[in-house]
Length: 75
Image 1 (cartoon, helix red, strand yellow):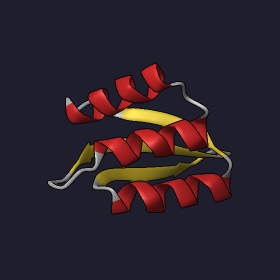
Image 2 (image 1 turned 90 degrees about the vertical axis):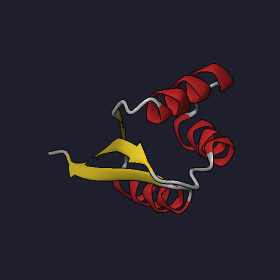
Image 3 (image 1 turned 135 degrees about the horizontal axis):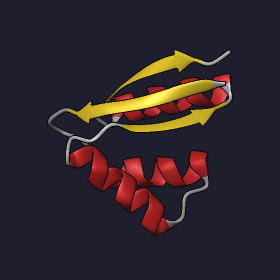
Image 4 (image 1 turned 120 degrees about the horizontal axis):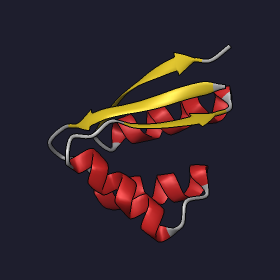
């Protein structure tokens, strides 16, 4: 498993597409995804855990959407 830690965003951040990715990968409902995107916009760190392959793919996609993040390998 990998912990994905969202640390912020850069100009051009696409919040609508980020919302869609969170809903797809994390099975969030609309409210959970919106709250998470709002937390990112407000400068809060957001964390979630995914299997290795899903975490890496999600990180690639979020990075393209203007999200800054880091990965932490869990034992």
